[in-house]
Length: 292
Image (tube, rainbow, N blue to C red; front, side):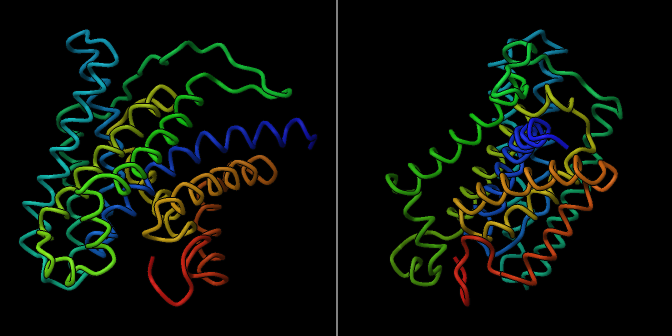
């Protein structure tokens, strides 16, 4: 194994890690607002890619318009999930809410298979497929789009939470929901915002990933699990930790697949999860002995 090969695996891992980071951001948003782990997050990724691909194929729409439609529809799905499934059970134990999100994931995936069928749907790369050589390793332009989407989403979340009333209200609910309600903040509205933002971020991840993996109705489950692992690695509820956890997971997964065997690619993520839970349960950027 040469240094060039290791560098190539590293760059490939950053692309995958960027996707995991976006998904982990969605997990962190909802966890902060509700304390619930939303296992339907991966289906938001699937919907983003499938709706964009289907829109371009059916109506010959330009990419930017198909992407906006995909983000808008997926955001509505996230809001409906909160209003129809989460809000009626808001006082139920967290394990019940988690089971509800698992059921929602199965329902969304099944509905997608009925609407679009089992076939993969290709999406054209945003800016060509000619590889870019960086220090002896090749990376596709679409990989840069994935990393760019991760960076823009992270900055957008920071701006929202630091400089908008809604963002500050969501932060207050995450820190102390009861105190936030006493200050006049409507918790249910903040939960809806978190589901809508998480769905939109998931849709963005699906759209930028679709040209690399192609869109298919069943890709959300494994992506969602990997995003969950990334969120745990970085520190559940920590937005910066979600980015760090996603990139770390993607790089380690790529290096493990290249240095050991690609057959263990999916297992590597869960082995890393077990190690993190044993060594530092709070995650890389999580606070020991407390929640973020």
